[in-house]
Length: 237
Image (tube, rainbow, N blue to C red):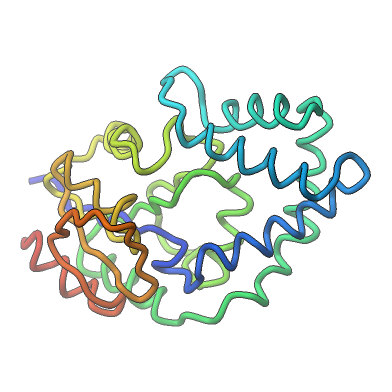
């Protein structure tokens, strides 16, 4: 029998952060790095526009990084070979300092560790709009960076984003998973619970719940601390 796999969302699930609050600080800080090239308003418009276009992309031949680069260069009017070194410098110098806006969450590491000890494979199924360096930085903030993740979805290694089913299928294909032996664990009703449509079980973490009004009826719901015992009930040995 194939092993069971727990797919964890990061922001708002393992990392205790309100997405809008965190993104405001993220964009404000990154905009400063582009201040000599464009106004803050122009930068935010280009960044958000490129982000939305990347999420919408369903071309399997175009990776998320390529989709974002093409969109941002067009919307900002800046060549990507000028843009990317600035972004890389930001992630090294400034991004780690955003940690001050995120509270500690010792529960996160303990929850994932318990799942591993219970025999689950683990995947960090976070929205792949950040490069690996940024995602690993946020993982450190909640103490999960050293755990045995089999895959971490990032801007660099994915071709699709949530809530598209193609995102979940890409993970399944990359790791040769059986969706029926997987549980998607996340705080976003629409982006995470949609995994049920490809056969995965779903568990909605309500600590920082995001629900835009379309009830997708998760298989389980509760607090992050409930996850280890709850998912064992969803897919018993």
